[in-house]
Length: 206
Image (cartoon, rainbow, N blue to C red):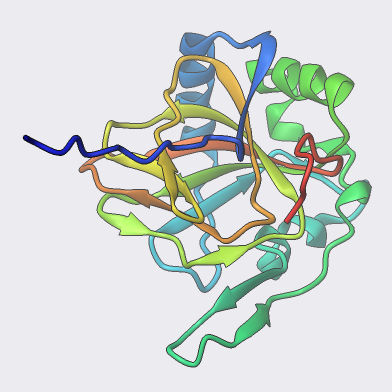
């Protein structure tokens, strides 16, 4: 008699699909293409990663430069298993002004719609280069994602669960207060609109 092998149940409880909210992926891609003619992804000290800020602290150009593009996180860097903090604390609540280059784009409409529904901090376009991964880390807040360009080789991994987020206009919130990373195993760059969410939709945060 053959013994049936029970497959473990996979829980996607740390991936929240926002209901009744969807954006026009074609307009996002068109305006992304236009933005990239004027602005370049900034990658301060991080390989295979880039960011373009959508919002800033009013009257503070430094709020979208240097380490403020990244922000504080925690990581387990080596075999000792010791958790260490990296980078600087950021007051996310102060990021309330749209960067001027986005004023006449569809991104403004997206930003305003998200701001009405969620308490947001920094909002950025984040680039993940092909065949690369982020560090194993956790953040102070959850993250909202609107995938714009992706491929089947891209997945978000939270603890031991991996999930592909399709670029179809849907909005996701991921529990980045748990250890996670993101990998792009494809040969095409991945670009998401990513926002810090200051009020978590998850029951057990962290």
